Image 1 (cartoon, rainbow, N blue to C red):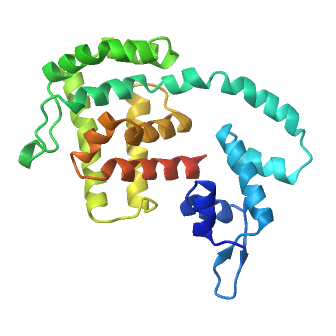
Image 2: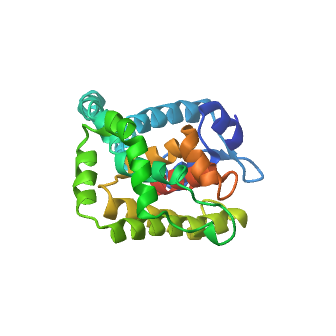
Image 3: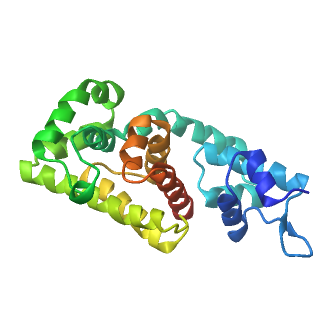
Length: 253
């Protein structure tokens, strides 16, 4: 028997995820005399399957069904394989947010005093768009989401772009305040901010599914440029934001 922390470490997941699986009845461990969760070998094997299915983008409800019924798993997996073949293009749909954030990375925002939460000017945005145009096109140019984002972008005026830039920065400010106050990512106040950011991307750039949004969060910590963008507001903010996004995506799935 292992503790929740030991299992999270072994499985490469988080205690928050394990608690959520317990709460929804997907992975319910036994409890010791003190009420602490204890996971058996059978629980570990079940978690291995859960994480396998999650890696294939199975919704939690479908995983429940797979465990609780005699559903033809082979048929379901074959169907999912076909969906996974489209996943590269699916994740490529991060294009517009990537472009917008890259435009913010070295665009002259002075991270002090009144400039801390000031959006970029149109000229700064266009300069960065030009600077990163080749990279963005090569990575995402063939995706449907990139085409959608470009179509929306062409209809925007200078004032529209500057307003969107300021909205993006304004959405960061409450996140910084919550982070510096030590509020856990599971707190409803944090999740409201995350949901607002998700809606901002979805409404102004491209249809952003939970998988796409989860991928964005992971990119914020995997790509040093994105990490730098968030961490110049507060060191460690990128990791905090990613953790908050992953919790949001898990609870919404």
